[in-house]
Image (cartoon, rainbow, N blue to C red; front, side, top):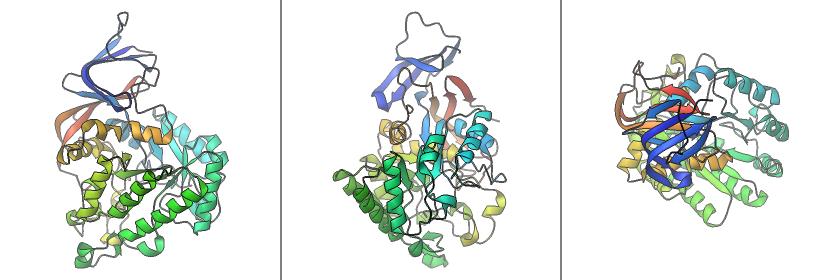
Length: 428
């Protein structure tokens, strides 16, 4: 393996409390030493990181790769390339593929495709119920043996609270993390926007914040009952932040993440006939967004994810409620995180921890840190690089982002995965 020296960079490694200028030495695909350079280290390759920040590669808790089953929207090859261009060196794949991730055979298929694409760090999340139909539990132990890092029912509803309880008991008995998207389907119905003034003004079917907070409250009660380790995915409202804060205060084993776009956009930003703003959970009120930012700053919310969902053109054509929800968001992840940190006085080290150290700890991975002996997954970015979101700077097959054509600040210039230089910024 090549010996690589990343020199002259500003190193930020939250896991190891490093915020210093210096170098990162890589040998045999692993981190050898950080900040200072061993006297006998002779690199085969040197990357000059002057004016740049060097940090651990990002760990993303929710990335749809659209394979298997949705090849017209993207694939493992295109979306992992987008991930590398975004500094994401490890990612979680939710189970709502087609077929869904409810058998070891699907896990093996994804693993083989990821290896062939040159991106080995795809971590499958197993289906909580067979076919994600919400009624019959999957073979969670077999999925764990096949390599699933957690279990979830993605956006699909569970048939009853008893199913959720049994799933927690099963997951807990095998020390499996249960990832839960809090949503009461009977309350959210066929809604497509936050139940509020904007939805009322334009006649859009609304989803009340209570659809999330009520489902979350039930989940937390069952977690207390079963002792299951749970992670709440993509929260969006004030009451959810308060409930998670209370649960943590009283010692419940719970963590949570928020999608990066939920920290930037609210119902007031939604252009009602532009389906690029159609996301689930929907963009909520200014107050909800304020609580999400505060929750991230004070540690109630542990991690930021991209919640990357690429779509083809057809999926976003039609009336707003009839289009498919989701944003292609990997490549705007860093820029939006830096902007959020600057605008809302979140310490940069803390913000980067939510992309690196915290998600790695949630998943129990030896990642998200520049610890000697760990795989050399490294992100180098220029925090002042201004770039436009367009076809020349975008790698994902999905162009469905409300930020298309906008100018963002902060760009990944190099990504190393396992000591290999897998991405280098070139304006195409």
